[in-house]
Image (cartoon, rainbow, N blue to C red; front, side, top):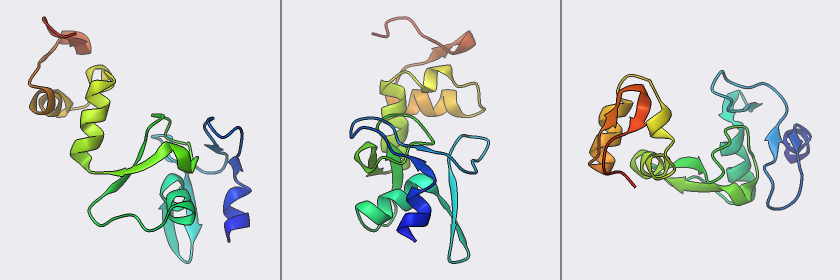
Amino acid sequence: MPDRFWSKVAIRGIDDCWEWRAGRRPSGYGMFAHEGKIWGAHRFAFTLMIGEIPEGKFVCHTCDNPPCCNPGHLVPGTARENAHDAAAKHRLARSHEPGWDGLFQAITGKQLVSGGAWGPGVE
C-alpha cells in the first residue's frame, strides 16, 4: 500500500514540494482510494509518515501547494489556525469566495477593500 501511494507522487528534494500526479479535486488537492475510502493525498501522506491526524485537526500545507504530499510540508492545525496562516501570507485577501472577507476580518481585525486588496493601514 505505501508503494502504490508513493508511486503517484513526484518525490524530489527534501525541501521541495512532492506533487501528487494522479486524480485531483478541482481545488488541486490529490485524491487517493484506500480500503473503500477516498483520502486527501496529503492527509494519507501525513498518516503514513507522521501518524494519526489529531482529532479535530486538519492537515495543513506550510508550502500552500494543495497537491504537495511532502510530509515535511504538512502540519496538523485547526481551521482557525489555517485561516490565520492564510491571512498572514495575504492569501485570504485574494479570495473572492463568499464569506472569506468576514473570516479575514474576524481573524485579523482588518477589512478588505474592493477587489480583494488590503485596507488602509495594513502592513
